[in-house]
Length: 66
Length: 177
Image 1 (tube, rainbow over the protein chains, first blue to last red):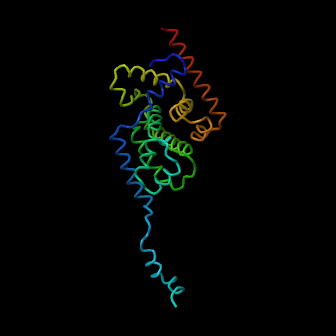
Image 2 (cartoon, chains in turn green, purple):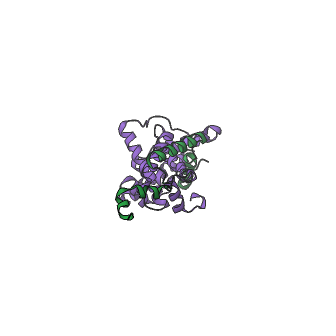
């Protein structure tokens, strides 16, 4: 794979350095990503109790109750 | 890119915390980022890659753009982390080049990798950044300019100088054979 021309050398640069991370490294990173996500961007799951909270809200309740 | 998946859908799913989307983004970005960090001789390239990905997780909510914007952003984070490392003196430019893990499997591979590292080391740091971001990051000169904080004319000039140095060294190699 030794190349004396410039294009060949640049292809060698790609071949030398471009590789996927080791499988154990990748899985460690993906676990860390999942943990970081949970810590910084809480999952926006639909709130099934939204109507109960709305009724319990005293400011809203004043408007919707006779 | 992203194995044919729609980038907007992947981005949305990642923002919702879907593991498959984060894996898709990781698979997309990690090889180039790791290659760049290795070639720029980061002290612990795998650890730095992990830090870059965590920064993306933390700031993805404020990200707006397409696939290549994400790539430019990721390489900008990596580049800045490298600069911080260099400022702390953590990078060890005098150490022998770190071979990719696969290099150890093939004894014929190592001399070539060593040669690549030796020739790249002849370039100054800015020239290395430009050449490596172009080749490993697959970025345009304009995108490289965004990553390293330089005008596109400066990037063009650095690329030209770097390639000229390499061309001249390669010619010397041929002459000595």
